[in-house]
Image: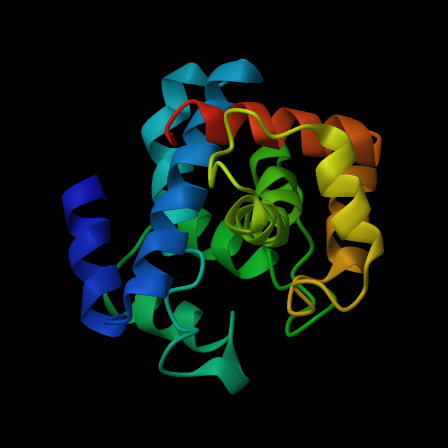
Length: 181
């Protein structure tokens, strides 16, 4: 599957700018981590997984990570993409456990990119470029802030990767700095 084919599939099922932007943020974050973790030759694949991870969320929120599998299989999408995208719903909507390092990264950064994005919006600069770990940690601890970003999932993702929460946040901020101003 090419990036263009993935985008066409995504935009068939997603129209809201918020969802399209989130998909692209996760796509680019996944590509960054592919490069950083020694999977550069799979960079585009990691990106496609990031782009399609919430394929079904806008139209089928109650069947998230379930309906997407059906949609992708009907379209002949590679089973590795189907497994990877579905696995980010592990313990939430599906019992498909993240196995590959790429799947663990997706699991960890999906919620975290949303939380970091919310922190950035509260900053005077509205930029990730001057964002520090301590600012994210302060908001992370505030349960009322960006309440839709599940802290348990973020911590579980860090644990899956064998990283500390601080390491995950720091590395994700670094990823976001590469494509946001």
